[in-house]
Amino acid sequence: MADGRIWIAEAGQSDFTQELIKALTEYRIKYTKDQILVVQHTTWNEKETSVDSLAFVKAHTTY
Image (cartoon, rainbow, N blue to C red; front, side, top):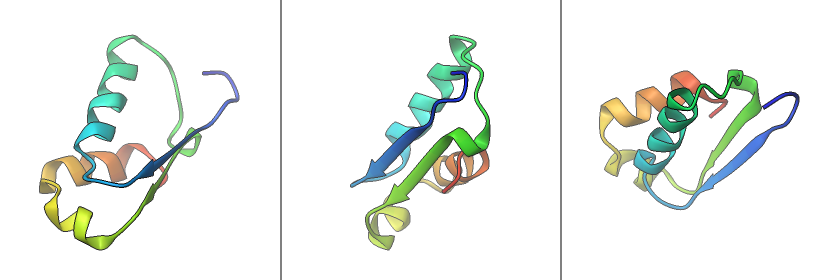
């Protein structure tokens, strides 16, 4: 990914974002936590996301 950044505006649960991050890893696309920035729309979405998915996203992105 070189020096680029990905901004993700979540208007739903973090499950899709988790799948995207796993795909980057699967395809051996290197990135740093600072290159993927996630902005969540509402705390309701956080409550509706599985605990594991939310923890994974927070661990691998700037959330």
